Length: 567
Ligand SMILES: Cc1cc2nc3c(=O)[nH]c(=O)nc-3n(C[C@H](O)[C@H](O)[C@H](O)COP(=O)(O)OP(=O)(O)OC[C@H]3O[C@@H](n4cnc5c(N)ncnc54)[C@H](O)[C@@H]3O)c2cc1C
Image 1: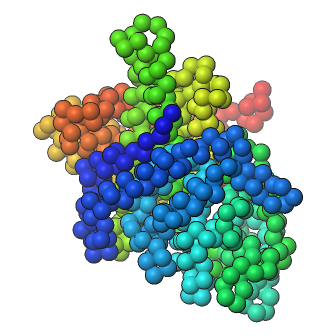
Image 2 (image 1 turned 135 degrees about the vertical axis):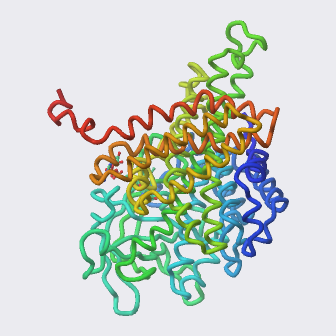
Image 3 (image 1 turned 90 degrees about the vertical axis):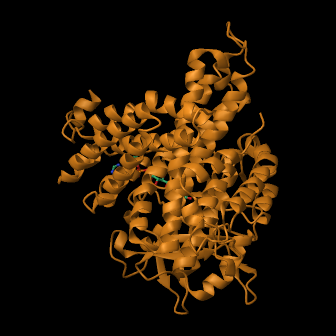
């Protein structure tokens, strides 16, 4: 099956649905008008189709492995990474002064998603570097920026993020890695980190680890954590990789999927590190990286879903079974339902992803706090809904294949196995949902209500051309408003948390209706209007059951005792 990067889908969304013009109209991004963005997307799409997509199976069939302590990556991955680096795709939104292209994050988000659709396990490598670039840009000293940023951006060096330890997963504050001052401005970092994506590779000269650790006077919990940059090789006087640092890859995890991405257990033994940000201010610095990565992981979900959709569609157009108009299974009503649901959900999740990226760009360009609040609000939705969509779509992709979906040689199962982790890493989707209903609603729901108002305003405008669809979206939005009012009135956080996942999904469903409606207005009589009708009629109603669940409180979830759960 040949992968085709969804360039035209992005062009349509940016120009007709999410309002990219608002970004291009700012001084900050004046050099990225839509025609330039189109040219960039086409160029990136070509690389995805021709260079990255052929590597997708290699990662699964020939995973990365350790050979006498040296990490060997999957066949072709070194060339794939080189192509990404040479195309400038690592530093798309990085500052020009360090070699980046200073493009809007919106563009980077689109390109990242297309790369993920082509080869998810390789795409995770530049995604990690991008997060590190952003964290260093905002929190590192000038000396660190000057040395590291150009090399990370050019892809000569790569970046990782090291939070997780065996006893510190979602609860990052429980970490026990330590950092002791060496007396010369550097620190000795000691501890074990697990699950470190792309903790090593055989195609970059140096691997730069951002490591969370606690200084001797660091308080327990998240407040006492600091962030350190710990390179595999210590830079010499000329900034070239010199002496090996005190760290190693102990082993690689055996995973359900994403085999092309080495997931490393890392051991740091007094490794030399440099403080990034303030002492005990590690979480703030790491959050810069994590927010970027959360959006990026949402894009991984959408991208993998796109790959799975194309794969399933191709199969449905060649497999003959039973009598249908075309002779192929694609013309069975239930197979059509699956294909339509996949396509409609990909559209919705991609639009949410872009809306989130655009809010970040508008925050960067204008400095307005409303855009910052919008971006912060949409980030957990983009992450959780994007990845849930990737999982649902790729699982449906297996179903479209029938028995051949369960047989590895078709490659359908790989999409599902690969994308499954995206709902787990970068903060599980449960943690994202709790963030949405707690921290992101500390404003009493102001940001949520502003968005809800916008959705209803557009629905009002749409009544002239699409009265039925507009009414459905408006009604769904009113239910969302009521549920949000209920939520912010709950003082016992358990009552919010118990329904946070269905609430986030319902919000995403309604946002999906909003963007589909915009597409219908822009493409009257066209395929996008038909897809919007399918989504709004058949998929949007799910919001009602989700919202009922969201407002049921915690008592029911704790109704069974632990003994009764086991009984
Ligand atoms: C392939 C892979 C790659 C990874 N890459 C990296 C990486 O590069 N760098 C890195 O630092 N880490 C990485 N991780 C780690 C990843 O971020 C963690 O697995 C994730 O944060 C969850 O932590 P955990 O596995 O300890 O699960 P746990 O925290 O033990 O969670 C188990 C379950 O409990 C739930 N839960 C936990 N706490 C709460 C709570 N307070 N309220 C409600 N529910 C809760 C979770 O949602 C989950 O369902 C990676 C993991 C994998 C599998």
